[in-house]
Image 1: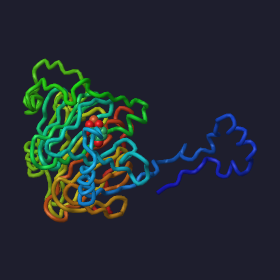
Image 2 (image 1 turned 90 degrees about the vertical axis):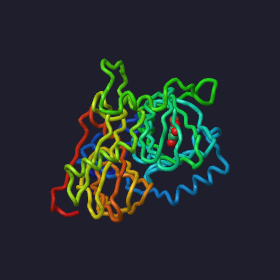
Image 3 (image 1 turned 60 degrees about the horizontal axis):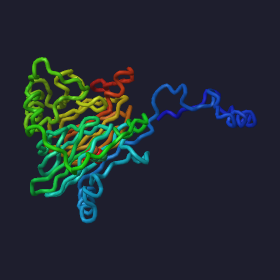
Image 4 (image 1 turned 45 degrees about the vertical axis):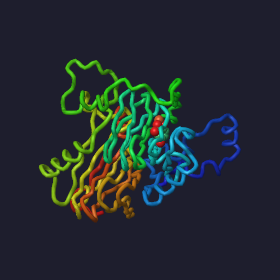
Length: 352
Ligand code: GTQ
Ligand code: FE2
């Protein structure tokens, strides 16, 4: 880890009265600000794994005294151990639970969310479209889209929430509002209508869609998993994995302007190619048991756990028991328009 230093070390100690005069004017001398000329990012967030076996019982405990009707959402947000809020500086992830018969009221907000369904089945309504969610399905609630959650089934629903709240708040652009009147929004579309319209490699000719985010509200695991396995069978290797990105079918771009999503397959005993990049990632384990090596440290994970790979940390994933399927969300799209993406891949045989 490199430590940022001032351009003129010890300057302030040499002439404290001068720097006090600056401070009184709310000014700092550039040559005393650490990091101004830092050659590369400092690793100031840490990798961390949140384990389902520890957190799901706490969600159940929360369910004994907090309802989504009262709490707006029964969600636990994961904070990077270095931060008061935010799994990384741009993203926040966590588990959300809805019990049979419960509803989480409709609202909309400038932060966007992705949901990765982990347990049970039910409905998230997005802009009037009831979207059916089952394990492994990715469901989008794009910026300023009305959304509510409903539970018509019989097993508690648990999913992973991934949002860009730290980024949006950092831009002083956080707005939210409750759905007027009713707790739940009116259903104006057929179930999974967006999947029928945009989800099979076809898009409506002369589509009038003008939003930046994907017109698809769901990417079902029943279609993404086979696609990933085919990709690996066709192009992968027995010792390393393959990754697909979920895209907006109209633009080929990320599913949400601020959040990209990926699905990675790693065969048992195989591993991903070591890499590091400026965007951060939050992974959630859909299948398999294994570990990741992040900046030389080992982090063990199993099904339903999620973990953060902060900016510019070298990492690789290893599938120890069973083939692994890892979902990931990232703040990658935030970096792209400003040419801030840097990615390095460790050459084969370079060691960890
Ligand atoms: O389900 O709408 O974890 O608005 C945080 C904010 C979930 C949601 C969160 C939200 C939601
Ligand atoms: Fe929300």
